[in-house]
Amino acid sequence: MNEALDPEWGTATRGVRSGEHRTPYGEHSNPIYMTSSFMFDSAEACAARFAGEDPGNIYSRFTNPTVDAFCERLAAMEGGESCVATASGMSAILATCLATLETGDHIVAAHTLFGSTIGFFNNYLSKLGIQTSYVSPEDIDAWKAAIQPNTRMLFVETPSNPLTEIVDMAALAVIANENDALFVVDNCFCTPALQRPLDFGAHVVTHSATKYLDGQGRALGGAVVGDKDIVGDRVFRFLRSCGPTMSPFNAWIFHKSLETLELRMRAHCQSAMQLAQWLESQPGVERVHYPGLKSHPQHELAARQQPGGFGGIISLRVAGGRAGAFKFINATKMISITANLGDTRTTIVHPASTTHVRISAEDRARAGIEEGLVRISVGLENLDDITTDLWRGLASV
Image 1 (tube, helix red, strand yellow):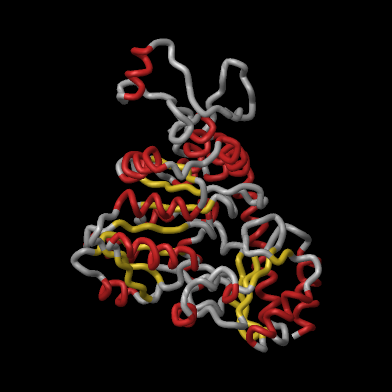
Image 2 (cartoon, one colour; image 1 turned 180 degrees about the vertical axis):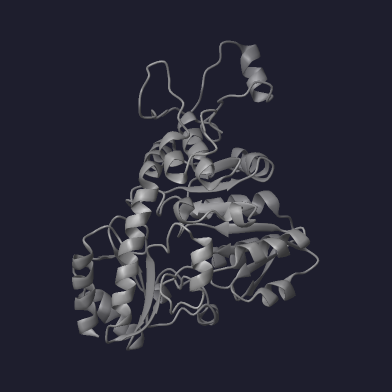
C-alpha cells in the first residue's frame, strides 16, 4: 500500500491521492512506464531480485510501476491489502479460480451470473474437474443446501447482470466461513464508490475495469482485490506464471479514471433513479428492475449494502417479447446499441441474444433472461435527452 495513505480518507480522496509514487522529476500526474523489462546494476543484483531477496521490478508481465500504482489505488478504495491487475474482467475471474481451486473442488454460484462467467464455469472449469452448482441469489437456505464437503468457493455478482438482483453478502460470508470456502464478489456494477464487499465479509473482490472503473469505454482490464495471502501471493503467482497481464498504458488510463470514479457514479445513480421511476409509469413497459425503486424486492437490502447509491444499470421488460424488444432498441437514435456498460454514453442491449446467448435456454429462463428484457446502462448525457430517445423506442412498441 502507499505509505502516504491516511486511514481516515474517504473513498473519493483515496481515488485521487493513493497510489502515487513520484520520480525525482516531481510530476503531479503518474507517468506511464512503457517498458517490457527492467535493468540491474550487476549480475548479483539481478539474481537477488529474481530470488525474491530484493523487492522491485523485473518484467512487465508481473511487475510494472504504472500497473502497481493502479493496483494500490484500487486496493485502497476497496479496503483491501492487495490487488492484482489483469487483462480483462474475465481473466480476473480466471486468475482467481485457477489460483485457489483444485481438481475435485466445488463452487456454489448465483444462477444470475453474467453469461460469460457461467460459460467459463460450465465449459472450462468443468474440464478440470471443478463443478458448479447454481442457486437463487436471494435464497439463503438454497445456498446452505447446495454446500458439499468439497465446496471451496461461493461466487456472486451483486447487483446481478442484468436483473440487478441483490445478494445478502453478510449472510453468505457466514456460510463461506463455516464451510472453509472462499467468498468471491464481482463488484463490477457498483465499484467501491457505491459498495465495498470486503466490509461485508467477502474474501475476494473481482472487477471488470473495462466498465465503470474506466468509465469511458476506452480500455480492457480487470482486477482482483483481497488480502496478502490469497491475492498478494496466490493470485499474483498465477499471473506471474500464466500472464493474463494488464498493459501499462491501460493501467495508466484506469489509474487516472479512479480519480473521478465517485463523482461519475453519483451522476450515473442520480439519472438512473429518475429514469427508472419514469419508465415504471410508461405504457409498453411491463416491469422495471432497479434496486433504487421501492418496487424492487430487495430495495432495503440494496440500501444497506450500497450506501453510495443504487447504480447506473436498469433492465426492463417491454411488451411483445423479442420482436418488441428489437423494435424498442432500433427506434432509439442517440443511445448506443452495444453490449458494453459503465460508459459516459448511455448504452442499450438485448441480453437474451447477446450477453447471455451462449448459455442454454434453460439457464436463461432460470436466470430470468426473458425475450422481452432490455438492459440500459445510463450514461452522463442530459437526462431529458436520454428520456426523449427512450420515448421514441417505447412509441414503437
